[in-house]
Length: 177
Image (cartoon, rainbow, N blue to C red; front, side, top):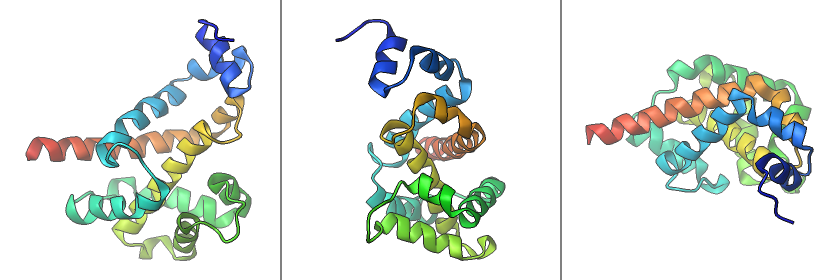
């Protein structure tokens, strides 16, 4: 049954409680993530981000459009060590139970095996873009309930900063053309 009370409708859609949705929607980090994602996808990924095309988009961003991940260095290091050092967190991020593992998961995992300071710029961008993409997928398509999203607030804030940087770069590129 459709109700016009958004919190009740969204809670029903997510399989949660209206109080959880109210907490989520009252949290600026969650709202910022949702807004930034809605801007990022059309600006940087041609309208729809797909796991199988992320690597080529990241190469284009770095090699053709000159995106420099250096200002995001501490975030790259954070996510690299977070998922390299904790296989449970990696498994939760990738939500991958298939064998063989997807190409996206395999490529991401191979970057974690390298020291972070040896990664090429396009590999650094790929690493952080995959994290943002997976957070987005876990929020919208995963089995996460609304109350669990905010347990990852620090990581979501980093994802928002990554998206801001990518969106700003794309906007500046458009203005210079």
